[in-house]
Length: 259
Image (cartoon, rainbow, N blue to C red; front, side, top):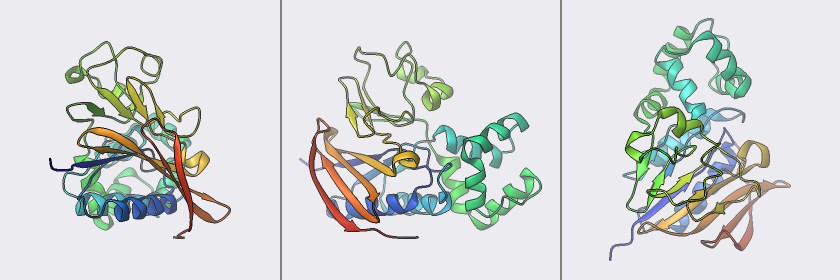
């Protein structure tokens, strides 16, 4: 049987130096397997380096066929600005949720209008604009559903609202019954700030902007085989691997990479 590796990466939030460490580790580990990467959204906002984080996501998707970005609720704010669909009220909310840091990272925070920001980004970051416009709401495999926030368990997968896919917490996180597929998601930081596995979902938002930790779930032929997390501790990059039950297997210290 052909070995097919899928790697789902949780919320990044502009913590680009940790994403760099994580991607280098994953690419080295699976260099001969031609993995596909599924980024579960929230690449931007809150952290200071949204632009280089987006550069890394773009490059990874270009280099690994079948890789995609699942649109997160934070990414959606920037996409709506690019489409001219962001209201003044929504823009104020976005700025409070980390939009200021994103615009500073892109060096467009002094533009006077949304139109100026849109023109500048389309001119200087066309790949980022194209990636956001091509982002998907979910990725389905025979056993799993990869989304940003989760799903409404009361509705079939083919009848989910975009709002639920990007924002849901109540009614999903506390749902204990099996669903159409096992849901692989980010958006809600896990209580342990480590990857967590439940009978009906796999949670990999490990609080990047708060903990400095970004996590990935590894699937071989659509079966969960474990997790990899990266973080920076006292100036050193630490990679931790976990088994399919999210129990730590090994941790090693590397020299961290600085932007």
